[in-house]
Length: 199
Image 1 (cartoon, one colour):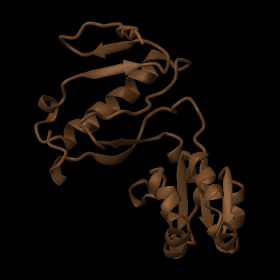
Image 2 (image 1 turned 90 degrees about the vertical axis):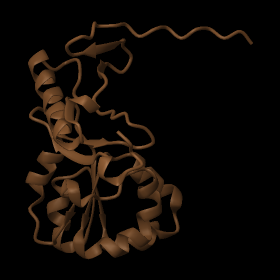
Image 3 (image 1 turned 90 degrees about the horizontal axis):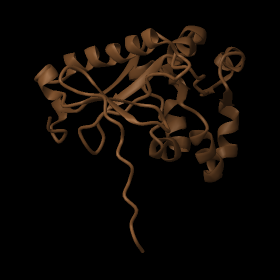
Image 4 (image 1 turned 180 degrees about the vertical axis):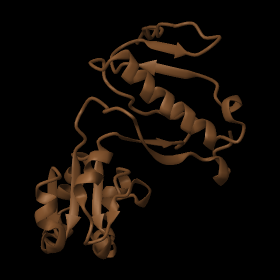
C-alpha cells in the first residue's frame, strides 16, 4: 500500500472479543456534571477547575499523558482541553478520539465506555506500512489469542484496497520472545540474534 495516499492509510480503533490481559489506564477531563461518575470509573480525573493549575506545568501534563492509555474528554470542554493539554497529549498520541468514543457529552454513561476501552486496540499506519498492536498476554488461552488475532486480521482485510494481497506477513511476538510467522506458506521462524559489532 502507499501510505502517502490518504485513502490507503489505516487509522481505526477495534474492540476485540477478549480482554488484552492487562488493565488499560484511563484519564478523564470533565466538569462537575460527570465528575462524580468519572471518579468511580477511571484511574485519574482532572476537573475543569483544575485546568489552570496544569496550564503552566508542562512537565505535569506530559506525566499525565505518559501514564495513561486512553483519554476521555467531555465534549463541552474540548476546546479548553485542546488549548491547555493539546500539545502534551498530542505529541504522545493520547488525544481523546471521537473514533474510539472518547469525546463524550455531559449526559454520558461512562461505565460501558470504560469496559469497551479495556478491549480496544488502535490499528494505524504511521511512518511505514507496518501495523503493530497488542493482542494479549502469554497468560491467555491459545483460543482467546487466536480470536483476537483473527478479529484484527479480518477487520484489516475490509480496509485494504486489495485485501489479503496487501498483507505480506502476519507476525506474532511476545515482548521478550522470538518472532513467529503465521499463515499458509510461512514456517515458524526464530528471531535472528543481532550480530555483535566490534568497536
